[in-house]
Length: 124
Length: 157
Image (tube, rainbow over all chains, first blue to last red; front, side, top):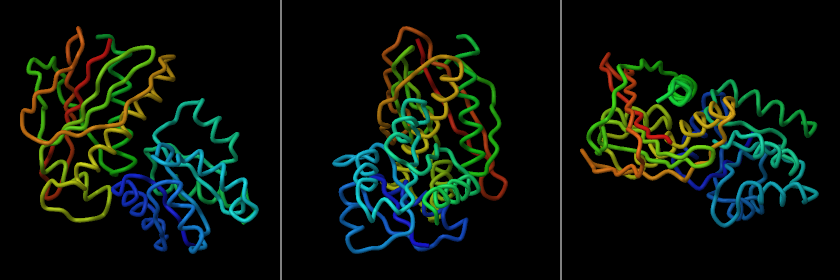
C-alpha cells in the first residue's frame, strides 16, 4: 500500500510515518498542503490519503472536497487526522465526504482500524 | 481553581503520553507558579478562547524534549534544533486538543491558537490573566531508568 501523508509540519509527517511503520506500512509519499498534494497525485498513484486539517494554501477540508469531486481521486480512501475533535469539525468533514476521521492522539492500532474502515467504505 | 478546570489537562497529558509515546506519566505535586518564566528549556504555548480564556504551556528540559522527539518520530537527535521544536509544538497542539475534548464533555467549548515554541531557560512568559498560574508537573521514564518532567502550566479564567 502506498500512502500520501499531507501536513504542513514536517515533524508531524514524520510522526505519522513512524506510526505507519509500526503497522507495517513503509511506502509513504508526502505533501505539505492540499495544493502540493494535488501536484503529487498527478504523478504518484496512491492507495490512501492521510491529511491534516489546518494547512496554508489549501486546507485539509478544501483538499478533501477537490478529491471527492474528482472521478478518479474519489476512489482513494481519505482519512482526516487532526487535533480538532470537536463535533462541528467532525460534522463538516463527514458532510464533505471523508472516509474516516481520526483525532490525535492516536495509537498504531487506532490508525490501523481507521485505515481498514476507510478502505472498506470505498469498497477496497 | 476548581477541579473541573484542572482535570481536563491532567487527563489530556496522561492520554496523549500513553497513546502517542506509549509512556505513563505520573503527576507530581501541583503548585501555584510564582515566577512568570518558562519551567523548562523548550516550551510550547497555546492560547485558549471561547467559553473561558487562558493560556497553556507545555515545557520540557532538553533531555525530555529529545526523548519526546525520538519517541514520536523514530529519529535520533542529540541537540534541540528546529525538528525538536516542531515536535514539542505538535505535542502541545495534541495535548491542547485532547484537553479541549475533555472540556467539551463538561460543556465548556474552547478554540485554540496555533502553537508557538520558545527555547531557553527561564524565558519570561507573560500570561495576560488576572488569575494564578497553576503548574502541573508530570514525571516520566526515559532511557536508562532516568526520569524527566513535563511541566503543564496553565492560567484559565
